[in-house]
Image (cartoon, rainbow, N blue to C red; front, side):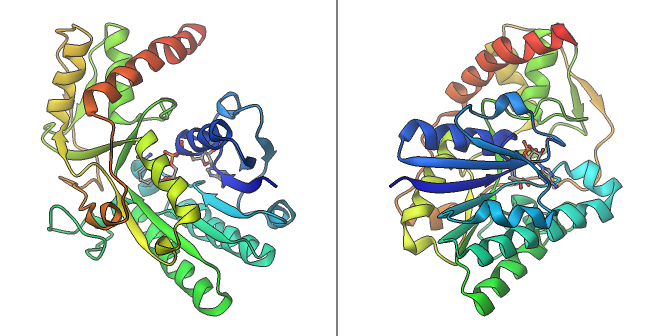
Amino acid sequence: MKTRVLITGVAGFIGSNLADRLLKVGGYNVVGIDNLSYGVKEQIPDRVDFHLIDIRDRDIYPLFENIDYVFHFAAKNCISDCQLDPVETADINVHGTVNVFEAAKRANVKKVIYAESSAMYEGSRKLPTPETDVFPESFYAVSKNSTMYFAEAYTRYYNLKSTALRYFCVYGPRQDYRRTIPPVFSAFIIKLLKGEQPYIYGTGEKRRDFIHVDDINDFHMQCMTDSRTDGEVFNLGSGINYSVNEIYKIIANLLNSNIKPVYRPDMPGEAQANLADISKAIKLGWKPKIDLIYGLQSAIEYIKIVVMKDCKMQ
Ligand SMILES: NC(=O)c1ccc[n+]([C@@H]2O[C@H](COP(=O)([O-])OP(=O)(O)OC[C@H]3O[C@@H](n4cnc5c(N)ncnc54)[C@H](O)[C@@H]3O)[C@@H](O)[C@H]2O)c1
């Protein structure tokens, strides 16, 4: 009997990568839901039983029947977009997430593994930041923080098991390059491949902890079978951070480019630095394996093949 997994946000970056991993490993049937507001249908692996539906819709409930594990990734997750529309941020990230918890509870699933965010540490002064140092500031971070309380209440009153994952800056194939302001890696790579000057917002001295999507997928797989993750929250980062300027130099070197970036005014609501304290996940035997240079090279190859083809077509 195959294990049945439901992924929300399956057309997005992390969701589609996890669907791929589950189908490659074998032994899983994958149901996926997404409203395609950010995600792309072509990214969903063929063998996923895909449903075009919004997580806020109560019609999602029947899709959860006979599901063993739920991975909940669907969210409005661009910090600057969230700052512009706090109402929609709360609607998707809080109301939508509670609807997913409700669906999971009604279907009596074994566990929900869901995405919180390192943005919840925005106001923390402690680096590396442990899971306990939560100080959300932006609307996005506050919305993620609220889901933590709902997850706890669903466990308290309905015995719904969950694991919360606080990703730092996840990168890898299928990273969302279509956003108004794409994640830093894809933005730099795309511009440099086109021979254009990339933008750096602020001075470029903000430091970020980057983690490859394959590394977080290792932990996703562990969460399904390791009961020590039940009711717990984990940071998923690499435990090393780089400034945006450093990342720029590494990417420009890998692409043999001497194009200089253009510095633009800083974006509101972003922390100066993040760095994960990953000791809690490491105690369970997980550790990040993918080196940044190798990870960047594979992101460049992906963008050359998939994204640049799209760019030419637009
Ligand atoms: N990528 C990162 O570095 C990172 C860091 C911290 C936290 N996270 C969290 O991890 C999760 C996954 O992130 P990602 O990078 O894959 O994002 P993504 O934008 O690539 O994917 C999110 C998916 O959710 C879908 N979606 C959005 N609103 C929806 C709705 N109302 N109903 C149904 N589907 C909806 C989008 O169409 C998209 O396919 C998110 O919850 C995000 O907040 C990601």
